[in-house]
Image 1 (cartoon, rainbow, N blue to C red):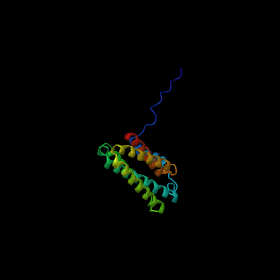
Image 2: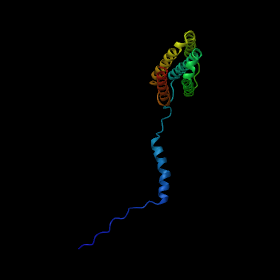
Image 3: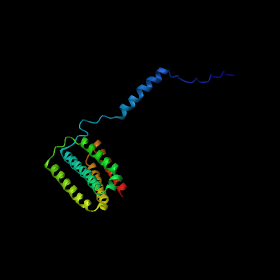
Image 4: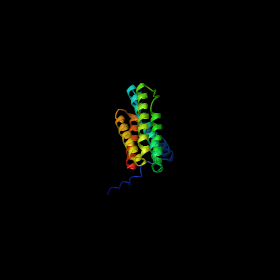
Length: 178
């Protein structure tokens, strides 16, 4: 009879030091592999995009003004939708941070003037009828959401994500105002 071979051992043992090194090194390697360096200028903004960002800033400023106007017309709406107005203000701040130093151009100036005129028209419409304040505000929210969603398609990277996120958030606000 032939002697039986001894059963295989448990295999190579890992030392505590090897496990600690693996615990420190592996996450670093994984992070380095998952974070591809973007080429220089990958999220750069073209002059046309600067104008678009200025336009989106004007849209969001108009929306923030519409909240203030609607709240002045309907204190009940102000109490119910204060969080939505705060969110619109936060979105405006994020857009301002994402826009490279946007200098007011004639196109930007006319967008601001038109937003001021539109806010004044909204104010006069809602000041007369507080019951219509919610409907006017909801229309303004839907218009801003559509504008940001459309502009999102012309950007890449973080700015596209920001505009898309704002558009989605405004769509949610539209539903909450319904």
